[in-house]
Image (cartoon, rainbow, N blue to C red; front, side, top):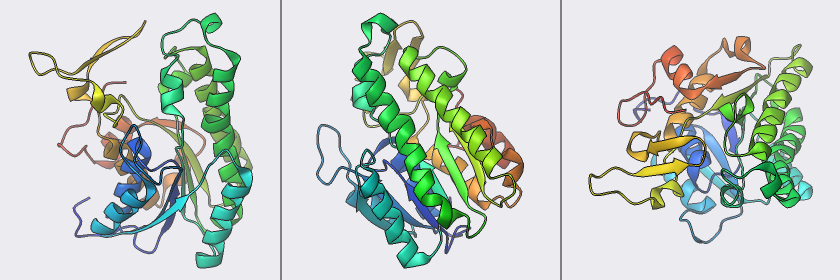
Length: 282
């Protein structure tokens, strides 16, 4: 966004898991579009990776929006319920819910492993935070979203339709996209839209730890999937621009129930990444 126009001024948004990574990128772009953004996550102090909910909220303010940090463990239904009660008390409605929270450090331990090498606890880690938490947030948000023409965005992956990372990852993303489709069925007679978005390879804080080689390339190799130059990856804010475009689109209902590549949304809506590219690296 240019910072001079605010297409989402007076809109109320929630981005779960927005201390860093894709969630932070989405929260910042919603803020740059003028929205009031509730930034949730567990991080109050930087840990192994940088980023806190407070820092994201402050940066939203610098971009022209209003950031509201809320420390919330989305594995705790009571805490999630309180979040939406807070929003209901303050605003009486919700315009955008972005279900993004994910346990990336836990999932990274099992990249490229055969299913018999991935313990059942990895299933629980992935589904509890990567699927169940999105369902819970949507349940508690629904009464507020139904006050107007709300939007639910589930951050998913092409792993729902092809092999990526391991069996648990693929099954979880398939479940998330099925949830998007079934939510859309239930919301068909309302003004609320629900979509999944598929970012490509994103240069998050975790992947920024990958060093450059002698030629300046930052190569990451995913077992069984190939090698990728992270210098060509998407920034976290590319997905954010997709969410802003969807939120500003008064005709978005026609997209409800489906999964959309961020790059394809860029083509449709005419936005680019921060460097002017439309990355295609999925």
